Image 1 (tube, rainbow, N blue to C red):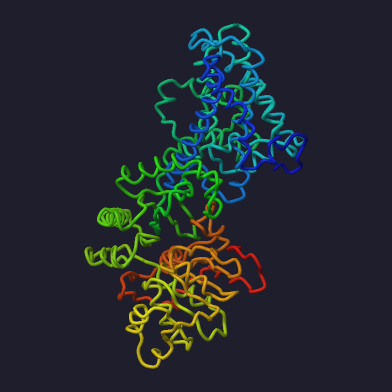
Image 2 (tube, rainbow, N blue to C red):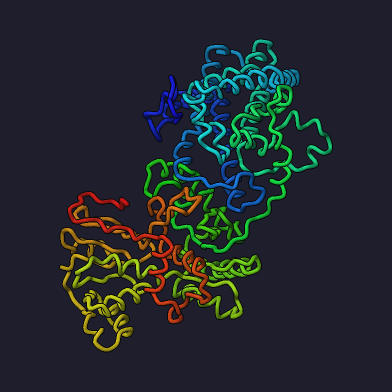
Length: 624
C-alpha cells in the first residue's frame, strides 16, 4: 500500500479475496460455448492468452526463486520477508484486468469478425510503435510518478520492494495499471484500426511485455556479455536486470520501460549501470555452512515450497478447497518430481548472523516405497555437500528413521572420515517437548510410536519424577528397557485416560482421542501433527521454536507451522552449526550431545519456545 493511498488504489475485485477469478466465470463460459458451437474462436483465445500469461509468470517466479536460493549472479544481496510476499499477492490482478479488456474489445469492436492468424506487417508495426510512442510515453509517465504527489499516493507501493522478484514488476495500484494499459495498448489499437492485427502479433506482444517485465525484476543477472559486445547499440534497446535494479535502489535513475535509450537521451541513466552489470555476472554461489534436507509430505505440500506459489507457502499448510480443484495438476507435478528428479535440489536460502543455511528437497513422498532410492539420494547429497565444504547436514521429516537409515547412522558408518556433521535433531526435539510440559505436572499419558525422540522424552520426565502412564503393554516394555533404578517406578502401565497432558505420536487412534477428558492438552512428539478431532481439547504444534529476529530471508512457512517458526529438527542443525560442534548427532544409541546442552545453546542463540495455549482460551488453533 502506498504511504498515502490515492483514488482507485484498490482493485474492484479486492473484496473477493482468493475468489477473485470468479469475475471471469461468464467470460470463460461464453468462450467455451462460442468455440463449441463454432460461432467464434477468438473468445476462447482470450482465455488461452490468460492461461498462458499465468503459466509464463509462474515459470519466471520459480526460476528466479531457485536462482535466488543458489545465490549466483545475485544483484541486491538483501532479504525478502513476509510483508513483501503479502504485498505482492496481487500480482495476477493485472492479468484479470487485461483479460476483461481483451474480451470487451472482442465483443464490442469485433463482434463478428475473426482476426487472421498471422500478418507480418502488423508485427513490424507493433515493434515500431513500441520502440517509439510506447517507450516515450512510459518514460515520461514514470518520471511523473516519482513526483512526490503521485509517488506518495501510488508509485511508492511498487517501490516498497527494494529486492525485486518477477512478480514485483506488476504490483501497482489499480489507477497505475489503467494508464499502463492505455500506453501499452497503443500498438494493438493502431494495428486494429489499420486492419493489420493478427492473433500471433497479439500473443507475441503480450508475451514480450511479460517476459521483459519479469526479466527486469528477477534480481539476478542472466544476459551474457557477448549479447552486448557483439552489437554494442543493443544496450540502448534492451535493459538488463541490473539496470532496472538500480532504479529500485536509487529511485531517481533508469526510468525506461524496456529500452534504456530515453534514459541516455535525457541524462537519467545511472552511471553505475555497466559496472553493476559486470559485477553481478561475476557473482559466485555463496558458500553454504549448513543444509537442511527435507521431504515432501503430501500432494498439497508441493505448493508449499517457496519455489511455487508464494501466497500459499507464506501461510501454514492447511486444507484449502481450491487445492482440491488443482488435484489433476498436483498429481502430474508429483509424478514428475517423484520419478524424474534424480537428486535433491536447493529451494530456499536463509541467513542466521554469519551462517548461511540452505534447504534442500528430496523429491519423494514415502520412505517405505522408495527406501533404497531415498538412502542413495541422501548419501549423494551428503557427499556433494562434503565436497563443497558444508559443515552440517540436518535430516528432516521422512529423511531419517530407525528403519530407513538408523537416524542417519548408516551414512556415518559407511563414510567414517566425513568432515560434514550429520544431525538428526532429536535431542532438541525431545527437549522442546519436555519444556512444553507445564510446571507442576505430576503425571502425563504417553501414546504413540516409540522413536528416538520418544525415548529421550520419557527418560527425561521419569528422571525428573514425573509419572509417565503408558496405555499399551508393548510400548511399556520397550520404554522400560531404557530406564534403570528408581526411574522405572515412574513408568506405569495403565488403562487410565484421566491425565490432562497427553504426549502423542504416530499411531494415536481416533478412539483413543475420544477417551481424553475435556480440556486435555495433546503435545505431539512426532514430526507430523495428530488429526484434530476434539474441539474441547487443545492441540499443541509439533516440536518447534520461534526463530530469532535477526534471521533473514524468511518468507515462507515450514509445512503446518506458523510464520517465523521452525521445526526443532531443523533448528537442531542450525544450532549445531552456530556452536561449531564437531560431533555427529545421529543414530539411535550414539547421540553424544546431551539434550539440555542443545536446549541451552538454542536459547543462547535467540531461539524461543512456543507458548502452550492456556486452558481459558477457547477455539485454540495453533496460534503463536
